[in-house]
Image 1 (cartoon, rainbow, N blue to C red):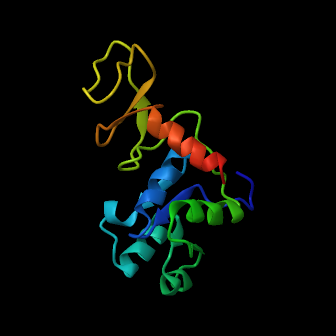
Image 2: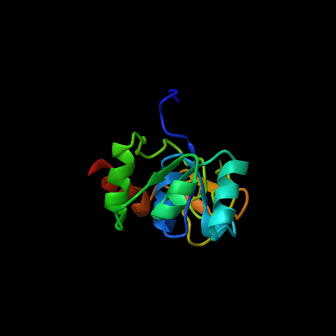
Length: 154
């Protein structure tokens, strides 16, 4: 990343869960307060410092306490994404999933001969990825298309 680009390691406050999923789908390593038991401001600030993450928050007081942060004012996901785009964040889907949309764990492609859960397509029919931490399976289905449209409409 260029020196003046926003960090690709982020931490989001408890009010930004939906945004965390979008950012993970864009390839950002995105910790989310509720996933990490860091709902309290001090815990969130410690997480950001300990893991060298940029804080994204809607809390003015919390943003003021962080050495580096992005303060969002919009409540709806489209507005939040626009604010981040205006701040220089690259907001387009990663060519392949790198982070689990549920827990932020790393994902790996499922071998075409491996079985997949009932909710996922067969890996022999289309590429499917699995989170190595929580086991969630992902593929480029209707949710992927919906997120792509949202990002393109920014």
